[in-house]
Image (cartoon, rainbow, N blue to C red; front, side, top):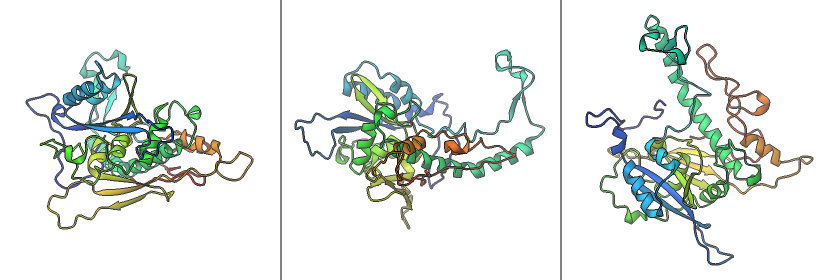
Length: 354
Protein backbone atom coordinates (compact mmCIF):
# COMPACT_ATOMS: atom_id res chain seq x y z
CA UNK A 1 0.00 0.00 0.00
CA UNK A 2 1.16 3.56 -0.63
CA UNK A 3 0.46 6.21 2.03
CA UNK A 4 -2.58 8.24 1.08
CA UNK A 5 -2.71 10.93 3.78
CA UNK A 6 0.19 13.15 4.80
CA UNK A 7 0.18 15.26 7.97
CA UNK A 8 2.70 17.26 10.00
CA UNK A 9 5.53 15.57 11.88
CA UNK A 10 4.80 11.96 11.00
CA UNK A 11 7.39 9.24 10.77
CA UNK A 12 7.39 6.14 8.63
CA UNK A 13 9.44 3.06 9.43
CA UNK A 14 12.95 2.75 8.03
CA UNK A 15 15.42 -0.12 8.05
CA UNK A 16 17.42 -0.25 11.24
CA UNK A 17 20.86 -1.84 11.37
CA UNK A 18 19.91 -3.26 14.77
CA UNK A 19 16.96 -5.28 13.49
CA UNK A 20 15.70 -6.81 10.28
CA UNK A 21 12.15 -5.80 11.23
CA UNK A 22 11.76 -2.44 13.03
CA UNK A 23 8.00 -3.02 13.40
CA UNK A 24 8.62 -5.23 16.43
CA UNK A 25 9.61 -2.18 18.52
CA UNK A 26 6.56 -0.08 17.59
CA UNK A 27 3.46 0.04 19.80
CA UNK A 28 0.13 -1.33 18.58
CA UNK A 29 -3.31 -1.90 20.03
CA UNK A 30 -5.75 -4.81 20.06
CA UNK A 31 -9.39 -4.66 21.18
CA UNK A 32 -10.78 -7.81 22.80
CA UNK A 33 -14.56 -8.08 23.14
CA UNK A 34 -16.19 -10.58 25.48
CA UNK A 35 -19.76 -11.27 26.52
CA UNK A 36 -20.64 -9.72 29.84
CA UNK A 37 -22.44 -11.85 32.39
CA UNK A 38 -25.92 -10.36 32.74
CA UNK A 39 -27.57 -11.18 36.06
CA UNK A 40 -31.01 -9.80 35.20
CA UNK A 41 -33.04 -11.06 32.26
CA UNK A 42 -34.24 -7.55 31.31
CA UNK A 43 -30.98 -5.72 31.92
CA UNK A 44 -30.81 -2.06 30.88
CA UNK A 45 -27.01 -1.96 31.02
CA UNK A 46 -25.61 0.51 28.45
CA UNK A 47 -22.83 -2.02 27.78
CA UNK A 48 -25.40 -4.11 25.84
CA UNK A 49 -23.89 -7.30 27.19
CA UNK A 50 -20.36 -6.64 25.91
CA UNK A 51 -17.11 -5.94 27.72
CA UNK A 52 -14.32 -4.20 25.83
CA UNK A 53 -10.65 -4.22 26.72
CA UNK A 54 -7.82 -2.48 24.86
CA UNK A 55 -4.29 -3.93 24.98
CA UNK A 56 -1.33 -1.71 24.10
CA UNK A 57 2.25 -2.85 23.53
CA UNK A 58 4.83 -4.15 21.12
CA UNK A 59 4.01 -7.27 19.16
CA UNK A 60 5.60 -9.53 21.78
CA UNK A 61 4.04 -7.62 24.68
CA UNK A 62 0.59 -7.94 23.11
CA UNK A 63 0.93 -11.69 22.68
CA UNK A 64 2.10 -12.18 26.25
CA UNK A 65 -0.49 -9.89 27.88
CA UNK A 66 -3.44 -11.32 25.96
CA UNK A 67 -2.42 -14.90 26.76
CA UNK A 68 -2.11 -14.05 30.44
CA UNK A 69 -5.37 -12.08 30.58
CA UNK A 70 -7.47 -14.84 29.03
CA UNK A 71 -5.47 -17.81 30.36
CA UNK A 72 -4.76 -19.42 27.00
CA UNK A 73 -1.64 -21.17 25.74
CA UNK A 74 -1.95 -19.97 22.15
CA UNK A 75 -3.65 -17.21 20.19
CA UNK A 76 -4.43 -19.07 16.95
CA UNK A 77 -4.70 -16.75 13.94
CA UNK A 78 -4.42 -13.71 16.21
CA UNK A 79 -0.74 -14.58 16.76
CA UNK A 80 0.06 -14.25 13.04
CA UNK A 81 -2.15 -11.17 12.66
CA UNK A 82 -0.26 -9.41 15.47
CA UNK A 83 3.00 -10.22 13.69
CA UNK A 84 1.62 -8.67 10.49
CA UNK A 85 0.86 -5.32 12.15
CA UNK A 86 0.50 -2.57 11.08
CA UNK A 87 -2.46 -3.37 8.84
CA UNK A 88 -2.57 -1.85 5.36
CA UNK A 89 -6.34 -1.54 5.30
CA UNK A 90 -8.28 -2.26 2.12
CA UNK A 91 -6.79 -4.70 -0.37
CA UNK A 92 -6.90 -2.71 -3.61
CA UNK A 93 -5.44 -5.41 -5.87
CA UNK A 94 -8.75 -6.24 -7.58
CA UNK A 95 -9.62 -2.59 -8.20
CA UNK A 96 -6.35 -0.71 -8.61
CA UNK A 97 -3.25 -2.93 -8.67
CA UNK A 98 0.12 -1.20 -8.59
CA UNK A 99 1.63 -0.90 -12.11
CA UNK A 100 4.47 -3.38 -12.47
CA UNK A 101 7.90 -2.53 -13.88
CA UNK A 102 8.88 -6.19 -14.01
CA UNK A 103 8.08 -8.70 -16.73
CA UNK A 104 8.99 -12.39 -16.95
CA UNK A 105 10.37 -13.30 -20.35
CA UNK A 106 9.17 -16.52 -22.03
CA UNK A 107 8.78 -18.51 -18.84
CA UNK A 108 6.29 -19.25 -16.09
CA UNK A 109 6.85 -18.43 -12.41
CA UNK A 110 7.56 -22.10 -11.64
CA UNK A 111 10.31 -22.26 -14.27
CA UNK A 112 12.33 -19.33 -12.93
CA UNK A 113 15.78 -20.52 -11.86
CA UNK A 114 17.60 -17.27 -11.19
CA UNK A 115 17.27 -13.51 -11.15
CA UNK A 116 18.71 -13.15 -14.67
CA UNK A 117 15.41 -14.40 -16.09
CA UNK A 118 13.63 -11.30 -14.76
CA UNK A 119 14.09 -8.19 -16.92
CA UNK A 120 13.49 -4.68 -15.57
CA UNK A 121 12.02 -2.31 -18.14
CA UNK A 122 14.77 0.28 -17.76
CA UNK A 123 14.62 1.35 -21.42
CA UNK A 124 11.12 2.73 -20.85
CA UNK A 125 11.70 4.35 -17.46
CA UNK A 126 10.15 7.69 -18.39
CA UNK A 127 6.94 5.97 -19.54
CA UNK A 128 6.79 3.95 -16.32
CA UNK A 129 7.22 7.10 -14.22
CA UNK A 130 4.41 8.74 -16.17
CA UNK A 131 2.17 5.71 -15.50
CA UNK A 132 3.02 5.84 -11.78
CA UNK A 133 2.24 9.56 -11.63
CA UNK A 134 -1.21 8.89 -13.11
CA UNK A 135 -1.74 6.00 -10.68
CA UNK A 136 -0.78 8.03 -7.60
CA UNK A 137 -2.96 10.97 -8.66
CA UNK A 138 -6.06 8.74 -8.80
CA UNK A 139 -5.30 6.15 -6.12
CA UNK A 140 -6.12 8.21 -3.03
CA UNK A 141 -9.57 9.25 -4.29
CA UNK A 142 -10.50 5.75 -5.45
CA UNK A 143 -9.41 4.19 -2.16
CA UNK A 144 -11.37 6.67 -0.05
CA UNK A 145 -14.52 6.10 -2.10
CA UNK A 146 -14.14 2.34 -1.76
CA UNK A 147 -13.68 2.70 2.02
CA UNK A 148 -16.95 4.62 2.20
CA UNK A 149 -18.75 1.95 0.17
CA UNK A 150 -17.39 -0.80 2.45
CA UNK A 151 -18.55 1.05 5.57
CA UNK A 152 -22.02 1.40 4.06
CA UNK A 153 -22.06 -2.35 3.32
CA UNK A 154 -20.87 -3.15 6.85
CA UNK A 155 -23.61 -1.07 8.46
CA UNK A 156 -26.33 -2.48 6.19
CA UNK A 157 -25.21 -6.05 6.88
CA UNK A 158 -26.14 -5.66 10.57
CA UNK A 159 -29.78 -5.30 9.45
CA UNK A 160 -29.80 -8.84 8.07
CA UNK A 161 -30.43 -11.99 10.05
CA UNK A 162 -27.35 -14.14 10.71
CA UNK A 163 -28.85 -16.92 8.58
CA UNK A 164 -28.56 -14.67 5.52
CA UNK A 165 -24.91 -13.71 6.05
CA UNK A 166 -22.60 -14.69 3.22
CA UNK A 167 -19.14 -16.16 3.77
CA UNK A 168 -17.51 -13.26 1.91
CA UNK A 169 -19.16 -10.60 4.08
CA UNK A 170 -16.99 -7.82 5.53
CA UNK A 171 -18.09 -8.95 9.00
CA UNK A 172 -16.86 -12.38 10.08
CA UNK A 173 -19.63 -14.96 10.02
CA UNK A 174 -21.16 -15.30 13.49
CA UNK A 175 -19.85 -11.92 14.69
CA UNK A 176 -22.58 -9.65 13.33
CA UNK A 177 -24.35 -9.25 16.69
CA UNK A 178 -21.12 -8.12 18.37
CA UNK A 179 -20.39 -5.57 15.63
CA UNK A 180 -23.95 -4.25 15.90
CA UNK A 181 -23.55 -3.78 19.66
CA UNK A 182 -20.22 -2.00 19.19
CA UNK A 183 -21.93 0.41 16.79
CA UNK A 184 -24.80 0.98 19.22
CA UNK A 185 -22.42 1.71 22.08
CA UNK A 186 -19.78 3.30 19.84
CA UNK A 187 -19.64 6.61 21.72
CA UNK A 188 -18.51 4.93 24.94
CA UNK A 189 -14.85 4.51 25.84
CA UNK A 190 -13.34 1.09 26.49
CA UNK A 191 -14.30 -0.70 29.71
CA UNK A 192 -10.59 -1.40 30.33
CA UNK A 193 -8.34 0.42 30.73
CA UNK A 194 -9.98 3.63 31.85
CA UNK A 195 -8.22 6.72 30.56
CA UNK A 196 -6.67 7.45 33.95
CA UNK A 197 -5.27 3.90 34.13
CA UNK A 198 -3.35 4.14 30.85
CA UNK A 199 0.23 3.88 32.12
CA UNK A 200 2.38 3.69 28.99
CA UNK A 201 5.23 6.17 29.32
CA UNK A 202 6.09 5.90 25.62
CA UNK A 203 2.61 6.28 24.16
CA UNK A 204 3.43 9.16 21.79
CA UNK A 205 3.55 6.70 18.94
CA UNK A 206 2.20 6.78 15.38
CA UNK A 207 0.24 3.52 15.54
CA UNK A 208 -1.78 3.81 18.77
CA UNK A 209 -4.51 5.99 20.28
CA UNK A 210 -3.75 7.56 23.67
CA UNK A 211 -6.24 8.87 26.26
CA UNK A 212 -5.38 12.50 25.47
CA UNK A 213 -6.42 12.05 21.83
CA UNK A 214 -9.96 12.85 20.71
CA UNK A 215 -10.48 9.35 19.26
CA UNK A 216 -9.85 7.53 22.58
CA UNK A 217 -13.55 7.75 23.47
CA UNK A 218 -14.43 5.84 20.30
CA UNK A 219 -11.34 3.64 20.12
CA UNK A 220 -13.50 0.51 19.80
CA UNK A 221 -14.73 1.69 16.39
CA UNK A 222 -11.27 2.75 15.21
CA UNK A 223 -9.82 -0.66 16.06
CA UNK A 224 -12.86 -2.40 14.59
CA UNK A 225 -12.46 -0.65 11.24
CA UNK A 226 -8.72 -1.34 10.97
CA UNK A 227 -9.17 -5.07 11.68
CA UNK A 228 -7.69 -5.01 15.20
CA UNK A 229 -10.86 -5.95 17.11
CA UNK A 230 -11.52 -9.55 18.21
CA UNK A 231 -14.25 -11.50 19.96
CA UNK A 232 -13.07 -14.01 22.57
CA UNK A 233 -15.11 -17.05 23.49
CA UNK A 234 -14.29 -20.67 24.18
CA UNK A 235 -10.51 -20.15 24.14
CA UNK A 236 -10.75 -18.75 20.59
CA UNK A 237 -10.13 -15.25 19.21
CA UNK A 238 -12.19 -14.27 16.15
CA UNK A 239 -11.47 -11.12 14.15
CA UNK A 240 -14.74 -9.16 13.95
CA UNK A 241 -14.27 -7.73 10.46
CA UNK A 242 -11.71 -7.30 7.71
CA UNK A 243 -9.54 -4.15 7.76
CA UNK A 244 -11.10 -1.16 5.98
CA UNK A 245 -8.66 1.45 7.30
CA UNK A 246 -4.93 1.14 7.78
CA UNK A 247 -3.60 1.09 11.35
CA UNK A 248 -2.14 4.55 10.77
CA UNK A 249 -5.42 5.99 9.45
CA UNK A 250 -7.37 4.57 12.39
CA UNK A 251 -4.95 5.85 15.02
CA UNK A 252 -3.99 9.25 13.63
CA UNK A 253 -6.53 10.50 11.09
CA UNK A 254 -10.09 9.78 12.24
CA UNK A 255 -12.25 10.20 15.33
CA UNK A 256 -15.55 8.37 14.87
CA UNK A 257 -18.86 9.19 16.46
CA UNK A 258 -22.10 7.31 15.86
CA UNK A 259 -25.21 9.33 15.05
CA UNK A 260 -28.65 7.72 15.20
CA UNK A 261 -30.67 10.37 13.38
CA UNK A 262 -29.01 10.45 9.98
CA UNK A 263 -28.58 8.24 6.91
CA UNK A 264 -25.47 9.96 5.53
CA UNK A 265 -22.02 10.35 7.05
CA UNK A 266 -20.38 13.71 7.68
CA UNK A 267 -16.62 14.27 7.47
CA UNK A 268 -15.40 17.37 9.30
CA UNK A 269 -11.86 18.67 9.70
CA UNK A 270 -10.88 19.27 13.34
CA UNK A 271 -9.71 22.83 13.96
CA UNK A 272 -6.22 22.96 15.47
CA UNK A 273 -5.28 26.44 14.33
CA UNK A 274 -2.19 27.87 15.99
CA UNK A 275 -1.28 24.62 17.75
CA UNK A 276 2.39 23.70 17.47
CA UNK A 277 2.85 20.07 16.37
CA UNK A 278 -0.88 19.23 16.32
CA UNK A 279 -1.66 15.60 17.07
CA UNK A 280 -4.24 13.40 15.44
CA UNK A 281 -7.01 12.78 14.85
CA UNK A 282 -7.37 15.38 12.14
CA UNK A 283 -10.94 14.56 11.06
CA UNK A 284 -14.20 13.72 12.81
CA UNK A 285 -16.45 11.21 11.07
CA UNK A 286 -20.11 11.22 12.09
CA UNK A 287 -21.07 7.66 11.19
CA UNK A 288 -24.77 7.06 10.47
CA UNK A 289 -26.46 4.19 12.31
CA UNK A 290 -30.19 4.95 12.20
CA UNK A 291 -32.88 2.50 13.31
CA UNK A 292 -33.55 -0.17 10.72
CA UNK A 293 -36.56 0.97 8.66
CA UNK A 294 -39.58 -1.21 8.08
CA UNK A 295 -38.56 -3.98 5.69
CA UNK A 296 -41.36 -4.85 3.27
CA UNK A 297 -42.11 -7.88 1.11
CA UNK A 298 -40.86 -7.99 -2.46
CA UNK A 299 -44.37 -7.27 -3.71
CA UNK A 300 -44.56 -4.00 -1.74
CA UNK A 301 -42.94 -0.61 -2.31
CA UNK A 302 -40.02 0.17 0.00
CA UNK A 303 -36.85 -1.44 1.28
CA UNK A 304 -36.82 -5.22 0.97
CA UNK A 305 -34.50 -7.80 2.49
CA UNK A 306 -33.34 -8.79 -1.00
CA UNK A 307 -32.25 -5.18 -1.62
CA UNK A 308 -30.20 -5.12 1.58
CA UNK A 309 -28.63 -8.49 0.80
CA UNK A 310 -27.78 -7.48 -2.77
CA UNK A 311 -25.99 -4.34 -1.56
CA UNK A 312 -24.19 -6.09 1.28
CA UNK A 313 -22.89 -8.90 -0.95
CA UNK A 314 -22.06 -6.74 -4.00
CA UNK A 315 -18.53 -7.47 -5.19
CA UNK A 316 -16.00 -4.75 -5.99
CA UNK A 317 -15.70 -5.74 -9.67
CA UNK A 318 -18.55 -6.92 -11.88
CA UNK A 319 -21.33 -5.98 -14.32
CA UNK A 320 -23.67 -3.07 -13.52
CA UNK A 321 -26.60 -5.29 -12.52
CA UNK A 322 -24.52 -6.65 -9.62
CA UNK A 323 -23.91 -3.17 -8.13
CA UNK A 324 -20.10 -3.25 -8.43
CA UNK A 325 -17.68 -0.53 -7.41
CA UNK A 326 -16.11 -0.80 -10.88
CA UNK A 327 -16.66 -2.91 -14.00
CA UNK A 328 -12.96 -3.60 -14.42
CA UNK A 329 -9.70 -2.80 -12.70
CA UNK A 330 -7.76 0.42 -13.26
CA UNK A 331 -5.45 0.53 -16.27
CA UNK A 332 -3.12 3.14 -17.74
CA UNK A 333 -5.08 3.11 -21.00
CA UNK A 334 -8.64 3.32 -19.66
CA UNK A 335 -8.22 4.69 -16.14
CA UNK A 336 -11.14 3.63 -13.92
CA UNK A 337 -14.91 4.08 -14.11
CA UNK A 338 -16.55 4.24 -10.67
CA UNK A 339 -20.06 2.74 -10.59
CA UNK A 340 -21.69 2.34 -7.16
CA UNK A 341 -20.20 4.12 -4.15
CA UNK A 342 -23.52 4.50 -2.35
CA UNK A 343 -26.50 2.11 -2.38
CA UNK A 344 -29.18 2.69 -5.05
CA UNK A 345 -31.92 1.68 -2.62
CA UNK A 346 -33.87 3.86 -0.15
CA UNK A 347 -32.95 4.19 3.54
CA UNK A 348 -29.64 2.30 3.40
CA UNK A 349 -26.95 4.37 5.21
CA UNK A 350 -24.50 6.18 2.95
CA UNK A 351 -21.00 6.40 4.32
CA UNK A 352 -18.79 7.67 1.51
CA UNK A 353 -16.80 9.84 3.85
CA UNK A 354 -13.34 8.46 4.68
